[in-house]
Image 1 (spheres, rainbow, N blue to C red):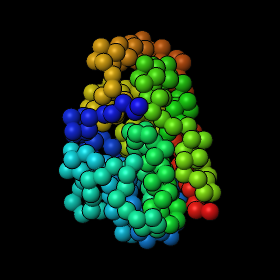
Image 2 (cartoon, rainbow, N blue to C red; image 1 turned 135 degrees about the vertical axis):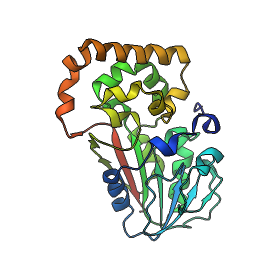
Image 3 (tube, rainbow, N blue to C red; image 1 turned 45 degrees about the vertical axis):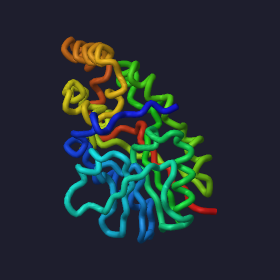
Image 4 (cartoon, rainbow, N blue to C red; image 1 turned 90 degrees about the vertical axis):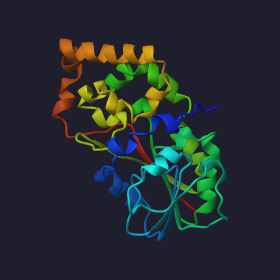
Length: 250
């Protein structure tokens, strides 16, 4: 069973730190194709919703819904696993950095495919492709995260149809605040405000979080991080964990 993050308690800073990166947004919007009506499921504060077509958002957390900006698409209270829409109700459906919170993920993915006449676009992570230093320093947190994250094969099987999986490079100056965004800026993860908008930390015992952050802080202060991983600071993009799974109907 998926461990649920209490977004009413832990979701209050998402709008500040989880802003859509325009380069990632362009890939998501391109995958939606010519769809004129789009359902955004697990929509959170509205990141990555297109503004050039009709969008309806579905989000179960009142705290997240309250942070949607003025002029954002209308939003309803609902869960991915039981969408209150007829079959083929919209041209396309999308879900961004959310499927690991669904219980089970496969049920929500099947619902996306059911309600969309055209493409289903899922933006998610393949955790074993994160940068090596994050897998080392965040290992206790990632051990918890791996269980609810479906594999790319599981996502594809649940969606059905004609599926393609695209890699998205993570920009070095990515403005979205998921933890891979800081692949060349590790100091950012020492900031509790940054971590407050990353759901992994809400699942951890505070002592484990202190141990993880202390380990990273020590490696940065001693120069060990830069000795082992400093070459990353010179890169513009990182070919890491970001994945776009696109299902087209049969």
